[in-house]
Length: 323
Image 1 (spheres, rainbow, N blue to C red):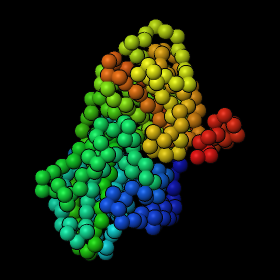
Image 2: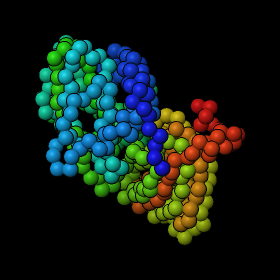
Image 3: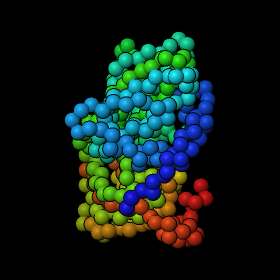
Image 4: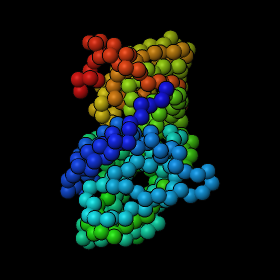
């Protein structure tokens, strides 16, 4: 199913809107009002077709941008740009490195470039602080504080972003975005509203989330826990005491710790579990104690408008529309 495409006029409107709300003096600009619809309007238009097969792709970086391809990107300020952000995205099984090629900004004058390990939208972080391997302050890498020492920053998942502020016209920076295969990806934002995925926890004590920023029908086809096998399928309101389980979460933000639990699974099974979730964000979250190898496989597809209306009228599942 194709994502509904916005017209150029609508994309331009959203760009102007985003630029108008990206305000504040915080170096990390966490309380922006960027929405996933505005971001993915960039992604859905041309970014996935930009890169040639064998050559390094190059283009200017915009003050508000989304990049889903490898390449070299240069930002040159034509006027003061005080609140800018660029969102980077790779495939689910990839992580991202951001390499500084050249930087000509005035750090002492208040300019900055900060790489964030994940995404920040409307004050919420993905991955959440509960699920990310680094403490919150280590997820920010400021060029002005560490540029001479750390010219390359690597993400922990398939998304990353930069905040930057430049006061003087003519100041610029160039960076290169590269993608690398991650054999055991953890914490993913899906590029597409449909697809399939298998999440594996290889005996590591960590929590991993697969985030689908669309209302979807999700089918969980297999769930395997190393310490429970050959038991009938069971879905329970809470499995926290088991230490190893899968949660299905829903809500309208990107921070999984603030989403509402829909169901928990803590018994292995093979066979489909179907569920339609009308939230802006549907998350499959695997909690692992590190003692066992856990695995969950699922597929998902975008809900059409009629299905969304039916869910909206259902008092049991309408919490997503009220958040």
